[in-house]
Length: 590
Image (cartoon, rainbow, N blue to C red; front, side):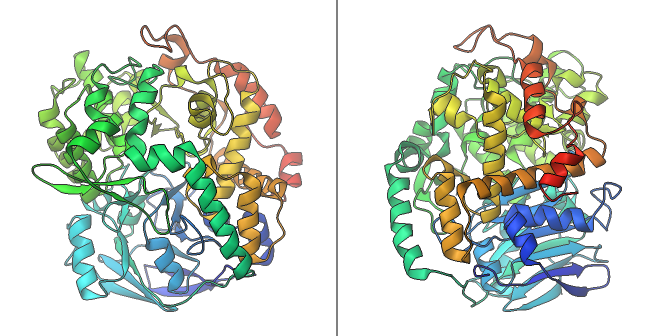
């Protein structure tokens, strides 16, 4: 099968043993690559009894059959068990690392065990060398990247952890090419628990393509679709992801002060327009990306990448802060220390509400921009108040007797959309296998942006079917592995055609959806075996009971139960959310 390097290496860091893992054609056909194959490998090699920081917990880096071949194809996926949520977890990143790993001759790497001392792994053409990293342990991600690049190869792509991963902050991120994050679920902490500081990849190999001429012509067609679409062709290139600030605020679902409100009166100060006017230096893009939604920025004190939409919300409206400089510099620190900005801002917001109620010992107040960078640094170092904040919102709120103040699902802090403003999004949050996440099914597309169809955001009718379909399509796209923004412009049939032209397969759009369904059910099966059930497919009570008082989503709550029952039935799960034996058999998961 074309599109593959046919090499996945399992590395035991405890004894430096290396073993090639053979993928059968059946595995590739059923799970495709990226997220799908990563989840399959993880469930084969692990069990629900293995905890996230156990040495035996596999940490898997996967490319996909399309990596390095078409637009937005520099991505890679990291799969493991999350220390933040205890669910199976995958997290994706752009940049160059995925392409470089594949050029070095590897489809994926699996790490088990724990190195006695800090190490990094140098990956070149068909070889893997484990090197001492004692001299860079304690360095931030930018320093780490510069030191290793000088030691090894300036052209190499490097993914690494900063101090947050080393200190096992439960929402630590991996960073590659300095400012590209594998952000959600704390997989950087899993990497730190193995004393693995960095992976370095560079090679000279080319991915085989089944139909190169046809692919070349089809790529031109895909580029036209991307340019024609209003989101990928206009909005994202013009203002980056922060173009959403004004839109979501006008819809009354821009979470403010720990989701107590849906409108932030100072939203303009952290908008995409203000970023362009005040701190933007240039656009930036991942490998072979025509969208270029990234932003290279600079304040009076620092420069770097971002902030993205989720970050300007997490350090802005969520905390009652409209100081763009403070938000941007906190974002830079997160990139340098390797911290998920969504979880960090959300957890600080939880602490601010606890403080507002007189329950938190540190006096952290809404709108306190002057303390923002300090708090982020303390989280990364797990010092002072940062030690408590580093545990995430769920554990923090529970400690102070107010679990309802944690805005999370299954322990994963929610992103920048109040679910009271979009019923389908609410269901997507509740049923996400990795916890509170908008990217498992990006219902903001149809419910807010009218892409690819326009749905009534306040209606529950038909939302269970649409959410499950979006979840399955997204699992397939994550397994290709291409940027999810392409879903605005490219339908599932076109995604399947790209796979066919690269690999020589003969997938239809329906086949692609079934692959996604299989992946989603395998993730669910692992979580069920780990003890997750219907009670975990729930939203914070704030969204179920408390109506928003202002904005265009006012007087709304989430009507979850009736959507959830319909969703389970459509999925072929029982009343507790467990896939039935018949469903597993249909998907070859028995």
